[in-house]
Each structure stands twice: as structure tokens, then as C-alpha cells.
Image 1 (cartoon, one colour):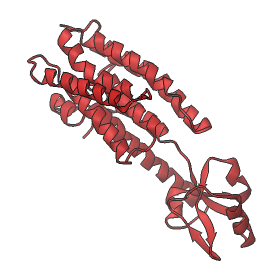
Image 2 (cartoon, helix red, strand yellow; image 1 turned 90 degrees about the vertical axis):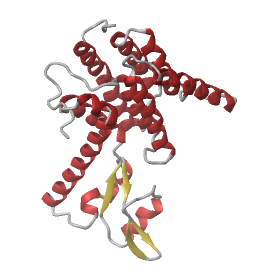
Image 3 (cartoon, helix red, strand yellow; image 1 turned 45 degrees about the vertical axis):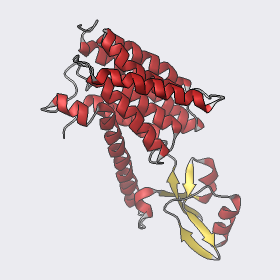
Image 4 (cartoon, one colour; image 1 turned 180 degrees about the vertical axis):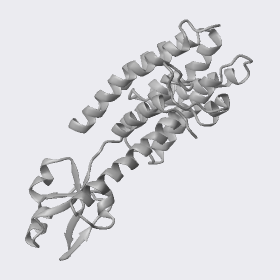
Length: 281
């Protein structure tokens, strides 16, 4: 069955709908260090609606059901763990159905695998923030295939059907997120060079500010005085007021800090880049 709207229109709607949610989540995480789960809960409903518009047939809906269960199960705190196991069991049983279908339901098979993969990244500590994981899971159900609208993206893989299976759109977003983070590190390096704040490796991952501003900004303090020695930490932890006092005593009026940039900001940048640039590999 043909989609109820042109696929290009649905892809454009996906981007136009998702962008305000991701921008709000980025702003909220940067200012408040908190993203309401309702952001992804609501956007998930839009994702479901757009998939129904694009794949309005019973086989696709059955194939889509396991991903819906996996996506929304995480939003609830179950009093009994067996409820979660039952839901995963139902999702697994439904997942078997599309494997034996002759209809083109592979987008939902890939979607389900990606949702489990993203959750495994969280369990393994690769992606720590629950909001970041939910954001990527939302992308996975929002855009199961590579988009195409208004002449975008700029690059489309030659063997698109193969790439959509081997390197789904959500992985492309994750790749661009990493590229965005790398560009920010390059920005830090150029900023430090322009201010003649030189030091290795701190000039690549942080910058110097007056010590009085440390507690007024969202930053990690990279310097400490431990056992009378001045120490630099590449992976800093939360500091105490005493740490600042010790640094003042040894004459440190400007200190190296690492900005607390929420990963959701990079994900948002990666999402926009993936829609506009596409897969150039």
C-alpha cells in the first residue's frame, strides 16, 4: 500500500516536528541540567503517526509494535520487574513475525535492533545520560529510513537500500554528533591559541577563566592541589570550595576548566547535519 502522503512530505514533517523538541531539550539541559521525559514521550507519538502515514498496512504495524513497546516501556517505573520481562517477551515474540514476511518491513526490523543497540550502549556506559539515550531512541523510531525532501540531503549513498540496513539513519546522527563534538574541541584549541593559553593537553579540552568565575559557570575544575602538589586532571570530578582555596594559596588566579556541554546539544547538531548533509561515506 502506498503511503498516505508523499514520503518527501512526511520526511519534512519529521524534521520540522523534531527540531523544536530537540532545541528545547538542548536549552533545558544546558540551563537546568534536566530534560523532562515528556519531551521524548510526546515526540514518540508524532513518530508513530508519521510511520503510520508512510506504512499504512497491517504487516508494517505488527512489525512496528515491538519497537513501540521497547521505546515506551522505559518511561514507566514498574512495581514488579516481571512486568518489564513480560513486555520484552511480547516484543520479542512480535519481532519474529516480520522476519517471515515477504512484504517490505525491513525498516521496522532495523528499528527494533537499533533500539536494543542504543540501550546496550547505555548499559555498557558508552552513553550515560538517560535523556541522551531516549533522544537517540526517538530518532530511531522517528526516521526509520534515510530522508529525502526539498533536494536534501546533499549526499545520498549509491546503494541506499543496503546502507539503510547496515548503517541506519540514527547511526548517521550519532556519527555527526561525534563530529560536532570534535569541531567544538577544535574551537577550544583555536580560542586558547588566540589568547596564548598554551598547555598540553588542557588547551585541547578546556580553557582558562578567573578562579572567581568557576562556581558561576557550568564547568569542571581541571586543577587541584593534592598533597601539596599542583595537579591537572583531564577527566575532572566535582570540586569543593576547599579546592579553590588551595589553588588561591599557591597563586592561581586563572585556572583551567572543562565546559559541561550536554551531549544532547551535539545530538541536536548531528540530527540537523544528518538531514541536510546526508551520508557522504
